[in-house]
Picture 1 (tube, rainbow, N blue to C red):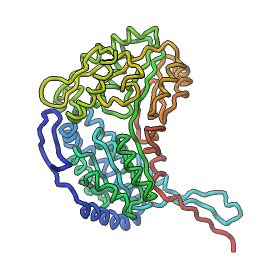
Picture 2 (picture 1 turned 120 degrees about the vertical axis):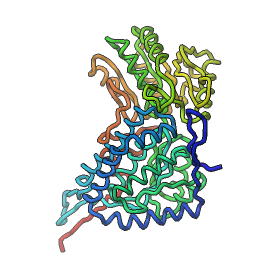
Picture 3 (picture 1 turned 45 degrees about the vertical axis):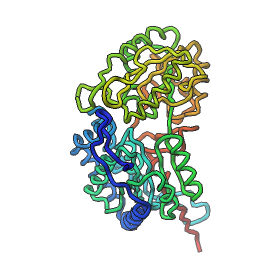
Picture 4 (picture 1 turned 30 degrees about the vertical axis):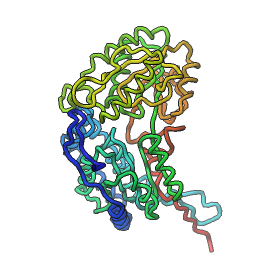
Length: 458
């Protein structure tokens, strides 16, 4: 059976299959990427920026096609899919606008020489291993800054995202990227260590599970290949107070259920001040219950299916484990009847340390709510997680909330918003959420040769 297939999670039907590359085919892809790099690196930065700018234009022009493709592939509702297409396009445009300036040589204190400077140079061929939950955005985070630098990209996407990845390659080539500048690598996971071992591959970036990250990091370490990992998260959301509890609960429900809860940085654990906990929980449950679940191609749908029946079943095992050990289900808590990978939006309370849900990531539409009687104790619990991607603190007093947010042990801390992602903001976590950063100027510094050039007097 092919590793790459479009299996519609709304209907459960396989709509398209793709042929896998064997090892020779994967190494041939490295050949193409290396040849393209020799050409691409010599093109002036402003011209590379023009290719990224044209890419952004094409994302706008082909928004409907791009959005419908991932709605069918992984179940994202059309409105959210179009939002992702717009976000991905904005990343290419941001690097087109700012990239050339960030590649300017940096003048240092001469320190006894005529000149000391740092030049930004590409390193070569890079491998990206990307997940299915944000098929365009995740790729843009990795590809845009590195193509701007002059690197070339091999992209192994998730098995269910071959169609969207083919569109990404098509658009980049249409925008003017040389053949081999971005290669859709339809290689099974077992071949990836061979690709990483190729000495022409100078770096690898993975967004995905801890297990996948550990595997890629091991292969990269054996070959002294630099890696960047963005892994899971179990983000905490601390609600200190709220004059409008209903609005706060509505915001929390929307944030958690976006993309069917399949986001590494969505607020999975919500700590609510004791004074408003009961009202918040009731309002949250109402909002979760009225979420419109259905066909992602229907414009009225607010939440589609999960990406696969396997993902749905794995989530249900975690929920059942919690319930069997005393957790309370306020709504949902089970797969929905009928075809497809639908799971009922769920609210859980009473999560305790003996449950898998206490520290495992629940990658689906499940909200966990905790009563917060002491902010310091809630912070201690939030920070005890093995994950450290992002977190947020909410209050009508933003300065008070900022003081609390400063105590979160995460890579990204927010006040009165959660998970905001913009091209000019760095993205990444700590602990088992991975290492390295994407986006902003940080995204230009992970896979680049910051070469010192020093000119001394004779």
